[in-house]
Length: 158
Image (cartoon, rainbow, N blue to C red; front, top):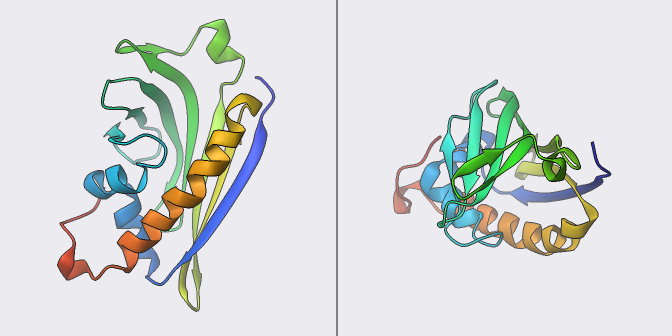
């Protein structure tokens, strides 16, 4: 395993944990709040413990992970195990082995104001600055989506 920096980010959202969970992991709203990382990003797979999930750009490039822990609506942890290039999963190359596994964990904590989303992500130093720029913007979009009344949003849920 390579050297990681542990990055942490958080946001307080005026909405209950169940709603934040549904918006955060719902296929359509996921595309919206992750746009600061890569516009049009989406996932394939299920948010259930032990499942494999693919995080993809519109061109089909991306990452492959396993859901290490899933406890709705309080915690989800991903174990990133590889990358996807040209539609092929790579979990064995020296390049991947230099950083994998890398974890990305979301804790949803009930607070008087609603929910505090705490994110912890392992990052290789070469990508840390881009993640540090994208995470606050992404969490702000997530906050706005969650605080928009449900009646004015499309159906959501993982």
